[in-house]
Length: 310
Image (cartoon, rainbow, N blue to C red; front, side, top):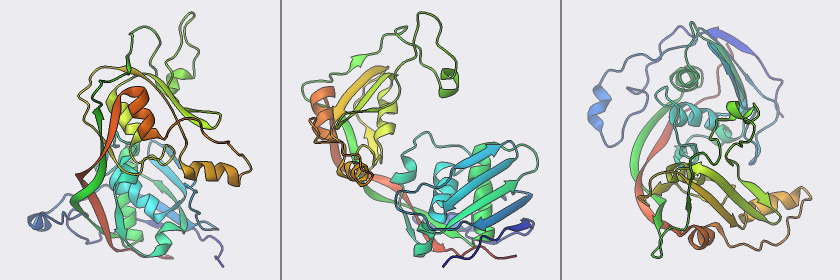
């Protein structure tokens, strides 16, 4: 049975000696002796464990950040590591959302996948959100969770997206046909007589539908990489050679795990009438998802402990 959450507040003033540069490259021993500049630290940080463990479909409570302050709500330690070392490794947010799921993190006890923690921290000045979620969160993990982690590179299974023999079937985007805009911009109505470009995938009865306008192939590939919602279980690399922007519309059957989740909630989607995504991409877009091997990063946890009580 879990104890009541305990709030712990401390100044992060001490220096913890860990592997040089926090992450040692397994294939480059010479880097082990290189000195690295100290990472920025939060002035004050509090950590408390949340009641209840994280289930397999629980993604935690998210992140709230304003300049100089951040709160990460009820996230498991694996999620914290992914956020700090993969998504925001050098204080710059990755442009590929799939990189978090596509980068293996090995080792560590089972509780890093289930026990949830809330971290609230205050920084001096106004560091950017990627800096707080990256190097500054790394310092908390190394100090309070005694984390030691290292990075390597090895051959991993990936998909390459290529053009089918018959040629691509996707339609080029016509500039001016709709307005490409960010989510904050979409909060305002489009000018009279104009509309925003389609951006979001949507369900269509028992099938799933991706219907987007004005996107590059690279952007579409990022939406596929390690995306369990559409059934892609590995990174996807663009090998099409196609440039410019396109309108992409593809209707496909949902993966079995999504249908099972819906049924568990009493929402029977019915039997799909569209093919699985790889077949749909080839038939409807003239592109092919080819399973190959490629080089990719991975991480190994050498040590991690539950955060100290003081």
